[in-house]
Length: 117
Ligand SMILES: [Zn+2]
Image 1 (cartoon, helix red, strand yellow):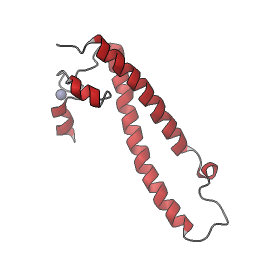
Image 2 (image 1 turned 180 degrees about the horizontal axis):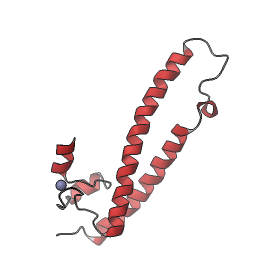
Image 3 (image 1 turned 180 degrees about the vertical axis):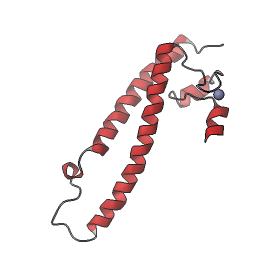
Image 4 (image 1 turned 120 degrees about the vertical axis):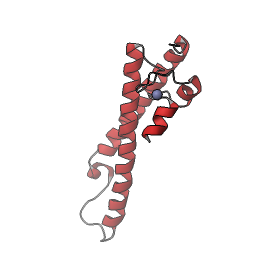
């Protein structure tokens, strides 16, 4: 087993911590009650509701994306902790550093990630 260099893991840990904070803040903003952000309220014209509903749908999609990302980030952080960071969760193969560079939260090698997609 080839492990990523310590410097790679340390850098990834920093990126993951920052990414997690970002994602959690975005989720908190999305989960805030609509009223708090000027959403649905009485007294608006009919039709505003439709636009708001569409906007909510878009937010749900964004929310799902962030939730999935956050799960990956947490998993990657756990892998840093237990020393398996940089190895595929499914097959155990080393994940190339270029991939970790682009997606520090990657927990699957390229072939496992593409076969699960
Ligand atoms: Zn794999």
